[in-house]
Amino acid sequence: MHKRITKQSFYRYLKCPSWIAYDASGEVRDNPLRSRVQDDALIQEQERAILVSRKSVEIDEVSEDAAVAKTLEFMQQGVQSIYGGVLMHGNWVARPDLFERVSGKSHFGDYYYVACDIKRSRHLKDEYCVQGAFYAEVLRHTQGMKPKQGYIMRPDGTVEAYVLDDFLTKFRLALDGIERILEGIHEPHFLTSDCKQSPWFDKCKAETVASDHLSRMNRIWRSEVSALNDAGITTVAQLAAQHADKLAHRVHGVTAERLQFLVLGAKALVDGKPVILGTIDVPKTDDALIVDIEADPLRDLHYLFGVLDVHGKSEEFHTFLAKQQSEEKAAWDAFVAFMESRPGIPVYHYGWYEQDVFKLMAQRHGAPEGFVDDLAERSVDVLERLREAVIFPLSFYSLKDIAQFLGFRWRHDDASGLNSVLWYEDWLRTGNREMLDDVIRYNEDDVRATWLVRNWAKGRTSS
Image 1 (cartoon, rainbow, N blue to C red):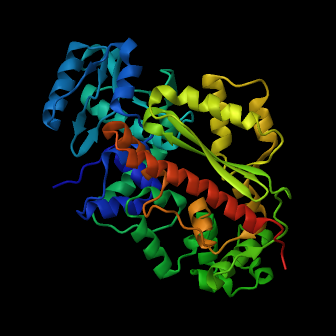
Image 2: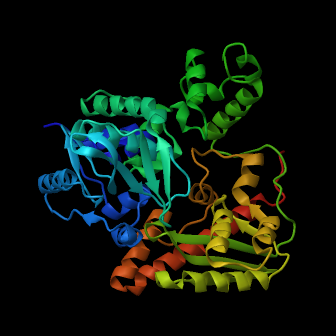
Image 3: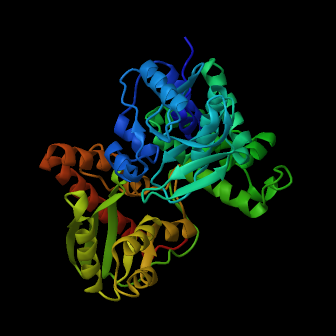
């Protein structure tokens, strides 16, 4: 039996080709809500609310064959908007969120259909467009006409178009790769942070570590690995044993400065010790506000703003919580009022995400004039400061990776941003307070882990 190819196949291949191979082995490691989070989708009730004005007909047949038959029936009738439709071509199964009728010529008459997905991200991502190219190929076989454009709808109902031919090469390369893997042809593994999206990440990492593959190194490029391989260097241990100044004439296409950095990174991994390149720039004052935000992307909702307020030896954790979707503005307003009551104090966070949310929430719910700019001015991105001055003996620099390396432990065994979404969804569905408490504890652990990393970094310089 042929393995089916769906839009998820392209997402998974682009994130980690081994994901396709492990899935094809037969064991199931999937969760429908987890898949929707990873696909930047919304829950269906949110999608239906967005589509009210379009008056879309909905395909609700349980069986796939019945859903395909109903989709074709609606298309033959010329229905304007079809939500949840399904089309098949061989082992290809296309399930965009919407099929929309537009003017033109096709097997159906003086109209044809285009596909549109509802995505929460404000950015047009390559995987969306590759999935759109896949829909277009299935539509070509169905209606005898291939759309020239794909479409993405945002949570506010706005639609963005993109030219499908711009992504045709990437689509075909991905399709060829997927088909090879499904035929049993092995594709060499390359570890990246995207592999963390896969439920098979533990196997991906174990395979990479066992072979001491160069992709163990943080943020090493495929082109750099190829250049090192051409020079006979195929493992981290081999790279760590090199003299950087002697590599420049052997490794082509990589600068001497970059080669020196890569050798230091390899030595850090082999020795298991961080390499300090220079002074880590963090404010000297120990007064601080450490911020971490929890969101439910399935609902385009930011429901928890957690702040650790540090003043001298005093530490107090504050939560500004939306227990349901309608309370997001109240949680944001309370957070804004609290932050304004602590003027001039450095605001720590880990990564760029919080700054983006501050801007988004100010646009959505409002904020005092200059509030977002003030937060930006006193903001300290701990990850950015670390990257400038430290090489850790780690493949990834997430808060979990670095804080755990430094000895921090989260209270929940399955603590992760993705699981916090599932816990919150469980709370909304069941009212089980323990799920909400898990989220709050996870958020508190995140801000305390950020503060631990900052304290490790403060005043640390190269020896």
